[in-house]
Image (cartoon, rainbow, N blue to C red; front, top):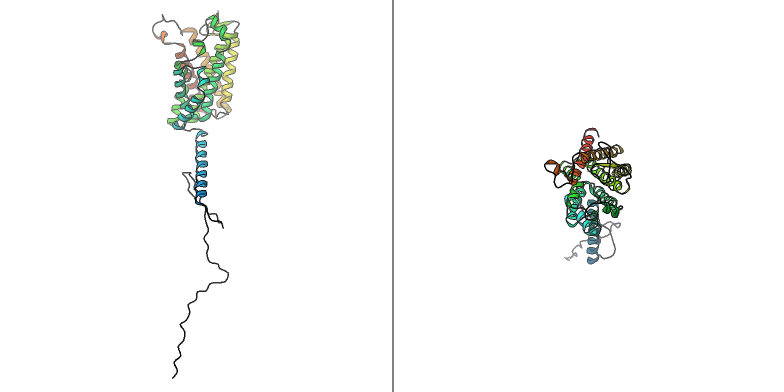
Length: 325
């Protein structure tokens, strides 16, 4: 008998000829910092990925994303108090020399608070209106300042305003901003905010231009001719300049996003004019700067009257906008 030993079978693994063995494919990962989404994108490459370069690219993308978030926050219509504080603080520090030309040190601090509320509630547009009022209000105060000082009718301290002037001009606007943040009724209170500054710039302009160029001035109640600089007095030159200033601020409220339509801008203008005339009547009848006055009349300083005037303008705008718009 012959024994035949067969070789052990060889195990072979076969695969279709059209498939290739998998190869390692490096991936470059992109991660978004956007809170709403996080994603990965794989990019095939035949080159070996370098860890340092990958980290650099990731950091760069993260920086771009963070920068985009900051820009989005600053350009938001209603950024909130945190962004408002940072933005107002940055502008205050950068523009301190300019602010110091129209405000004393304490006034600048209070203007920072007003600016914070304006930016928080109404964004760059609201802050822009505050800046416009400050710049143009300071400019008209300086018109023929030497002549007004000689006549004894110029603003004290060379036209520099104090914290009382800041809130005399902007308290109503600050209240509108606070209510907008608290209630979310931004459109309604934005109209009141704009009316406040339209009214105040109109009043400041009519007063300062009237003192500088008014040829004949009259009491707003009796139309009796009185000297320039008399409380409650009006002049043709000053009145026209004041109306033009209020109109300009009302028109500007449209591109600044404070007036939602031309009709709201018209409401801002009408509210400002009504409040300005009411201020003239108040000044002609009860306002006084005399230190010898007593009672309620003694409390009606120029800054208090300004608060009443701007509050009336804001109140009219808010009520009408809230009911009819």
